Length: 261
Image (cartoon, rainbow, N blue to C red; front, side, top):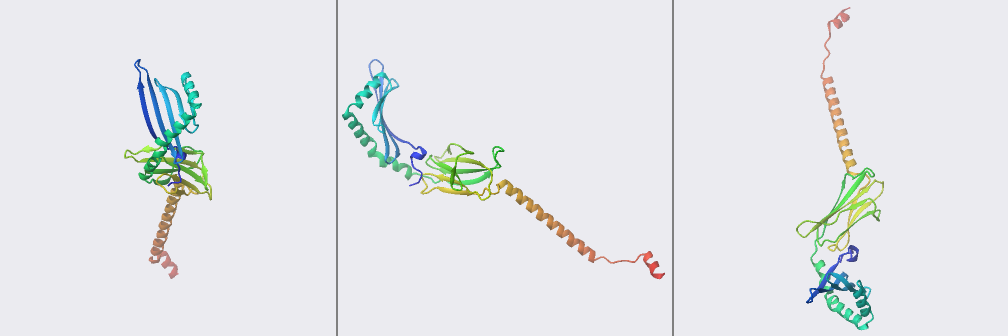
């Protein structure tokens, strides 16, 4: 079971029943019963009355009462709320429709999961406020709900973070990308944390914010250039020394005249 729970990512699984009743004058009533599963112990039962597509009243098990939205709906809500047997009937309906199916509903997403592949890389920043930017990407995961969080030295970061919604790959899997703009600080540790139903614990990817990748590339290129220059200079000196040792001094006519005098 992942540490990422249902409520934190707003995963809502629905189980509903509907009935539409038409009258001879063309009007119709729509009656809807719905179960909303957020946690194994957080199940919400809802009943709705609609008349000609207008909601008249609804029951919510979290509040354990009816709420009216039209004059007639207000009358119905007051009547139902004052009836102890109606409360018992609503609770019995919740047990039959929702609680009895909880194991089946909650078991589905955990039996069919695909673990995300997570990649952390450095890219060019969007603007000049910060000199560096990291992008954390999660690929090929299922189901869709996922949470990507940035941490600086273990503390969650919410500013200078840009995330996109989950993108469908077309094969039932998804991908997501989150960007963090920052100014490198010596000794600072930046971490991308990914939580998903397929993971028994969050995936952590640590970045090295001390030197941005672009700066590291420049340093590598500069070092290579310097090394190449040293090699050429050394080769030139060796060649010069070899040529110097191979030269023979030939006396000129001036030198011969000086020696004879």
